[in-house]
Amino acid sequence: MVMRDRLVLFDIDGTLVDTGGAGLAALRRAARQLHGGDGPALNLAGATDSALAREVLAHFEVQVSEVELRRFYESYLYYLDEHLGSGAYAGLVFEGVRELLEALREAGATMGLLTGNLARGAEIKMTHFGLAEYFGFGAFGDDHHDRNELGRVALARAEAASGVAFAGRATVVVGDTPRDVDCGRAIGAVTLGVATGRFSAAELASYGADMVAENFGEVAGILEDLRAVFRRNGV
Image: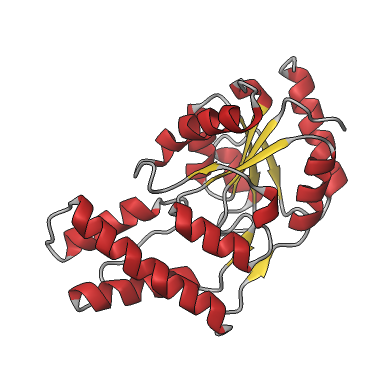
């Protein structure tokens, strides 16, 4: 399947990889280091790191400012890198991910990240799990705290990287949460929900994902489904 002039944007956590809890542990350690406690219960599914940082600051009644956010980011990123490098967290790349990325690259697709991770956090994770070579650009949690604002950033960076102005109907947003589906819908993209996180394929379909998959184990089937969707979209 040729996918030139097609853009595929991937979420990270719960979609490409599972860090084994290293990310949440790093958030907690940053909160303890800077504010003396673990902070509030956090819903990580599809959240941006900048929104999570704001929740932590609000919990400790700290005024949100660029200075306070930067302090929290630096502490969190330090611990994230330490945790992943320590080998104490049983993280993994999900089944079929490498095969799918290879197939998309061979087909000529442009690939990027569309994630709530901070840019540096995404770099740490993708480097640790050996996936960085597939992604030359992305939109990240420090670009905006609202996940639905990140799609437009990703489209602009995709055009800058490739020279192609991608239409929404020629773009696929891949993720494991309803927030990923909403984010894709905000730019008129095709949405592929994958049930590798906490949401089932049926739940993702009920939230409006255009396509769903249990996992990336059937790469050929996923590519065929994408071709069918693009054909229906006239691209």
